[in-house]
Each structure stands twice: as structure tokens, then as C-alpha cells.
Length: 283
Length: 310
Image (cartoon, rainbow over all chains, first blue to last red):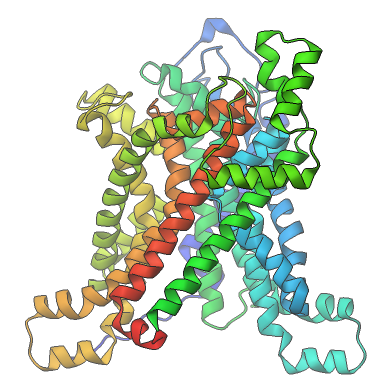
């Protein structure tokens, strides 16, 4: 039997999925950032005479119960949802990266203490762990971001550790240490740059996880206070009149799903590009 | 020796559980608020009564004593008392468990069946439009939040077509939509790994040999390709059990079902911390045990692994 050779993978930035993902993320970020210009009335401007209008001219995505434009709320909501995602990612990377790199680089006691803590955290199902953190901190948007960030930290620490472990034995690391470089210098100048590619790829995947679960907590009513134009919270608010005004829930859900899809596709194609042995960040 | 592997794996599971339990204790200690006051707040108890209750609950003891007391209670499956209802947390969990277990089991069945089908289809029709289509469904499953797909399913199948009730529970008709929604979300990660594993197995010499011997394609597939790929599916189903529990919490909320999810969400809103801790420790216990069982089953099913361990 003659096997067809597998098609050659296209360069990272020329893959349609990657391009589509990047385009959506840029559009969503622009929409959120420019919301004050694009929708100057703000997400809270109510007009009860325009309650639950279907999508049409003047209100492209319809209005909600209080007559607020769904499109306006989606744009402003991007600030909340994407902001939550980024804050969560900062928490996960900010804690997981140093912990994981230190564990992988130093080994020994540092590693066993860090990794046992990681194991303990990983014993909890992710969303339940995030719920526990919200329970301790009290409901709110800030707690939700911190909670999903903390829940994503152990997995990130693991990836950082294995990246550091792999690079630690490379000759250039040994050379740097033999030349009298401090541990700090070796980690920052040699380990980190060479571990960057897998760490960035995994961060994209983690961003998807953080957004999915953060919005879930908001959907469950544990985060953003009532009326906040956060996408998960908007989905929750629209449930009450799903029959009469499905657009109130479906559009925030669509925006969220497209964002998650983009984060996942981006993470995947980064991962694939890495598996082919090329650094996707170099042309 | 397999007994040594089982022993080591059992010890590992117990150790991780002890760490998790300790973490939960530390978190509780760090949380502001007086449990005795929370317990008695509704009854309008006097300061003296609260102080008495504090002593009774052992809250005035040194931290290490409290920790020992806590471990001892957990060992006797005593999860403490709800601050809101004054009832044993363990009992409240057991009451809600059947509803969640029903959803979790049926969603696992749906997700495993769909994931296996999608993964095998993609691998067998590698690099054709069918593979692309299966991969697209897989990625959608991975990326669509259940709180959105659930609402869409209600919109279409309950409100538009009126085939199934939108909310509530009881019979199979109530269970079907939630299981499909949660199962779909679960199928993505299963399909992805099954596809990769089947592709890998198809390259194995024993598969080529079976083909060369002129065995019927169906037999080659069932015996030589699918069977060795099944333990992978088992492992990923176990690993996804944590995702399943979280997904069940959300699915319960979408379809307004009773269950552990509703219990936990309400407990968080009312800051009924013993209940939150109980549900979460219960989730961790289930998660660790399911993965332990999967690892042991893996060692049992996989002759090569069995030999390696021996």
C-alpha cells in the first residue's frame, strides 16, 4: 500500500485557523478598548420604552429588559471579560512561572516542596478550587479573577518546571554557571528565554481555561454584581426571558465562545509549530 | 510485582488527599469570621452563649489541636455542621449526591461514546474532509461553554420544538438534554486523544503484520487497533473527571436541577463555609479515587505495563 505523505505544515502565521483566531482576538480587544468611543452612551443607559427589542436597524443585536443595547453592553463587557482573563493569566503566570522555574532549576527541597503543593492543588477539580477561593475571598469580580488565576497556577507551574528541567542540563547553562553566573542570572538570561516558546503556547491555552471558568463563575452569580455587562453575567441575566428575547443571552455566549475558540486554536497551533522543532516567534 | 505498584499508588493517593485536606484546613483558618457566631447568628444568641459554643466547637484550642480534631472528624466522615441550616454537612451532601451522580454518569457515557466515535473516525479517515469535520466538532466541543450550549439546547429542543422539558429533573426526558450538553463538552478532549492514539497504533508493526496476513479490515481494526487504544480513552475519561464535576455544577445551574452544584453555589453566596469545604473536599476525594481506580485498571488491562511493573 502506498502511503500518501502527510501535507507539509504551513508556517505558523499562514495557517487560516491562526489568522482567524488572531483576527478575532484583536477585534474583541479593539471593541473593548474603544467601547467608550464606539458606544458613548455606556452599558448602563436604560430606556424602558425600548425593552426587549429584537435585532434590527438602530439596535443591531437587540435590547435587553431595561432597553439597554446588547451590542453596547457586549463592547463594554469585553473590558470586564477580557480584563478578568488577563488578570487571571497574570496571577497564574506570576505565581506559576517563578515557582515552576525555581523547582526545575534548583531541584532538591525547593522542588519537592513546590511540587507537593502543586499536587495538593491539582487534587481539586479546577472549577471547584476556583469556587473555594471565591468562597474564602467573598463574591466579586476581583475575587473571580484571582480565583481562576490561582486555580490555573498549578498546571502552569508544572509546565514551567518541566521546561526548566529540560534546559537545565544544556551545555550553555552549565557553561554560564561555570563562568560564575549567579543562579538568578542563569535563570533570567538562559533558562527563561529558551523556555519561552512552550510557556507562551501554554499561556494561550490557559487563557482559554481562565476565561471559560471565570465567565462560568459570573454565570453562576458568584462574581460580577447584578447588571455588570460581563459576558457570563449577561448570559445569566438573559436566561429569564430566553423564550421572548433569545438574543440577550445568545450574543454574549457567541462572543465568549469565539474568544475561547480563538484562544484554543492559538494555543494548538503554537504547540504544533513547536512540535515541528521551529520557533514560531522567529520567521 | 503488581502488589507493590498497587501499594505505592494507594499511598500516593492517600498522601495527596492528606495534603488537600490540610490545604482546606489552612484556608479555613485564614478566612475571617467566627464560626460560632455564624452558627448562632440566626437564633439571636447572647455573647455568653456564643462563647460557650466556641469552647464546645474547640475554637479556643491551639491550632494544632484543632487540626488534629479536624483530621479525626474527617476520618470518621464527619464534615461538620452547616452554619446556615445547622445540619451535618455529610448528610446534606449525601442527599444531593444521587442527582449529580445521575448527570455525571450519563454525561460520561455520552461523552465517551461521542469522543470515541469522533476520534476513531478522524484517525481512520486521516487527512480527508471527514477528519477535518470530526476535528472541527472536537474543537467546538472543547471551546463551547456548557452554559451557552445548554441555553441553545433549551432554546431549540424545549422552547422551539417542545421535545424535552427545559428544566427540572426526575425521569429520562429531563436527563437527556443536560447529559447531551455536558457529554458534548466532555467528548472534545476524549476525541482528540483517541484520534492521536489510534493514528499511533495504526503505525505499529503488529497492525502492519495483521494487514499483511490478509485479515479482514474489520478484524484488524477491532482487535489490533481499537483494543490497544481503549486504555488511553479510560485514562483520559478519568483525568477529565475533574472537568466533569465542574461541568456538572454549571449544567445543574443551566437546567435548574438539584444537586451538589446548587448546594455549593448557594453555600458560597450565603458564606456557609463548612458546606463549601465539604462539597469541595468531597469533589477532591472523588477525583483522586477515580484516577486511582483508572491507574489500577490500566495496570490490570495492559499486559505490557503489567510486565514492566513485575
